[in-house]
Image (tube, rainbow, N blue to C red; front, side, top):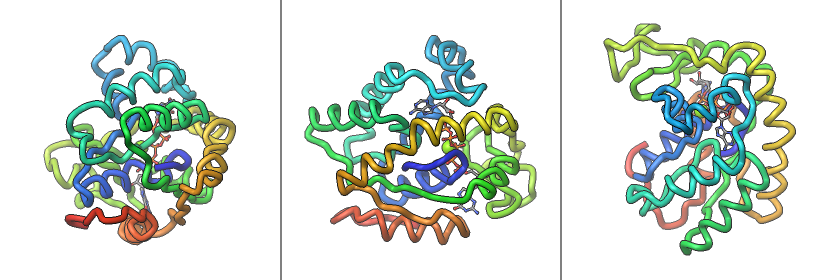
Length: 219
Ligand code: G5P
Ligand code: MG
């Protein structure tokens, strides 16, 4: 999943992983968990994340190499938030080639920046399952608790403050947007308009995913 902050990588990536019965690997989630647990990775990543800057390529490549080697990835995986730089994309190609694997599709979601800012301002997350909600397009049933964890109150993300959001957009434009050309040149890019309802965007992604003989389980 490729796209700017707030475009729906996590929301849609999670649905694709469920539908195709494969693992979801969200590098942002892995880092936030490491920060919450105070692990060496978390201590190293915290300052960059809170200020909206990308974490070092070396750290991220090592993390993804390890995670993609775990048994639950055997039948494939959805990557949310990786790669984010050209060196990360090159490292991913190399590590998959070593294992005889390849990327089926790079799903690029595009949404206007005004809409993204509104989404990030309104985003609330379940601290248990990390599902994202939004009063405008993806409201929780009662507005304050997770639908799937009815006693758990929704929280905001530290890096959704105004200054960190501005920095995240700058990082996206400078370091991640070049991946659109990188994957288009390799013929692997599938662009999808990310504006609309969560269900509508999901259907468009499924159509574009071109996942060959894989059969979706549920939608
Ligand atoms: P993250 O965690 O990868 P970002 O900034 O790339 O953070 P973010 O904010 O997690 O991306 P998202 O996952 O694209 O956004 O969007 P989302 O949470 O699913 O949805 C956003 C809002 O829109 C929600 O309120 C949701 O309900 C709503 N929404 C979603 N889909 C739809 C839709 O289809 N329609 C409508 N109407 N609404 C929708 O990375 C965080 C930090 O970790 C580090 C960096 O420091 C980064 O800043 N990091 C890395 N650093 C270096 N390299 C990497 N590879 C790194 N990965 C993470
Ligand atoms: Mg996300």
